[in-house]
Amino acid sequence: MTQASPTADVFSAHFGLTSDPFADGEHFFASDQHVRALEFMAQVLWSRARLGVLTAPRGCGKTTLIGRFLQGLDERFVVAAVTRDHLAPRDFLLEVLRQFGFSLEDNDKSDRRRLLERFLNHQAAMNRVCLLIVENPQLMHPSVLEELRLLASLEVEGRRVLKVLLLGEPPIERVIESPGMAGLLAGGVVRFVLEPFSEDQTAAYIAHRLRAAGSSNPDALMPHTLMSHLHACSGGVPGQINQLCERAFACAAEDGAQSVTAEALDRAIRELGWQARINRNPDLVHARRRAELPEVCGKLVISMQGMPDREVILDHDRVLIGRGDEADARIDSVFISRYHALVVRHDGQDLLLDLGSTNGLLYNSRRVLRRVLKDGDLIQVGPAKVKYLNPLAVPAAQPDPAETICFARPGFPPAADEDDGTGTVIAFGRLDETTTFSGR
Image 1 (cartoon, rainbow, N blue to C red):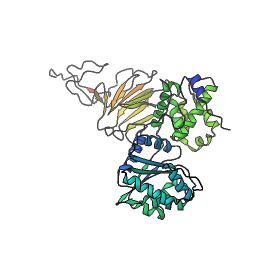
Image 2 (tube, rainbow, N blue to C red; image 1 turned 60 degrees about the vertical axis):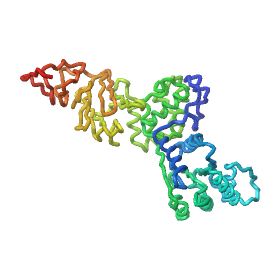
Image 3 (spheres, rainbow, N blue to C red; image 1 turned 30 degrees about the vertical axis):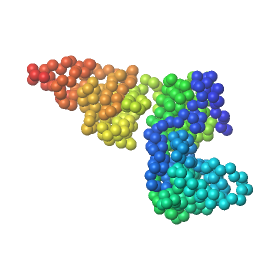
Image 4 (cartoon, one colour; image 1 turned 180 degrees about the vertical axis):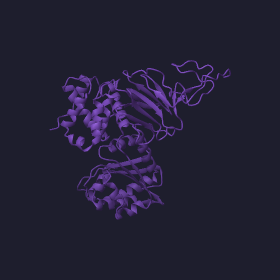
């Protein structure tokens, strides 16, 4: 049986937070796609399209997103939001009127459609924009959708008087494509799909929530090593992330731990009854193993300007760095090749290899084709800085002959662990000691 989530007092007393970081509707997280969704809804208001459709799986925060959007509207906009489903046609019109500010009883005998038409016409004459937001229309009776179509077709002097924004789960597409909605779609329809978070977005989302609740070091409360497991089990759905994190913090508090441990997260999954997800998702086995790796395991810390740092654990013999979806360390930038570089485990060392990328790898401002990684190494990969951390990295017994500059260029300073390079040119791992150069 699922146990209750921790109260705000538990978060305050045990973890030093000022509020419950995972309460629904709190601490809006402006991810890239949520910002684009807000821009999409603004487009519905200002474009000629009379209908916009926003689709997202349950728990992805459609209601929170709408609340954020409405906060930015001024007196030029009049908004009605219908969140109830399974309404009869008359009840639907009554709910719309109430949302627009009418005080009507359930047994009122007024002609609701005529009353609504007059209201919309009056608002149009006042140069106001009326917006009707309908959540989960896929659950409504076809006769209600017909009422919606009639309202959306109203015009004053050739101008539509009502904008409609539909929010729903993927089955909404069946409603939109149904023959009965053809008239509504004739004026154009714009669509936006809100996807669950990626693993990196999940980590940034949790860190944002914890910071907003008063944490100065989110990673100390929810270690980054748990993110793969947490993301895989929650599917990246914000509602499920909130649910799992709350339960994990409750388990950690019960254990007397000052942060969420792998054991607390596993127990939270069991208490939520989500064990079957692990059996259905082979990636979770890998995520669990990563969460249990010791801290001394080699890892890459990837930093990009304006984005939170993220870690890639080197728990495979080969770890691919690139722009493609198949990359283990994915860097989304046009300056990164699809297959940019590879970290290979060999003889107890981690080797960084350039895979013939366009922009290459820079170490101490010099392009290298291969580098035996040492603890603390910082490699520039396009716009990203990749730091290698592994205190147990075995030092090389002798210099690696392939660890070279791709092309010697005048004016580059020597690397910290190299000679000053006077009178030599290094190319492709071979040192030509028979030729000296007096010029620079």
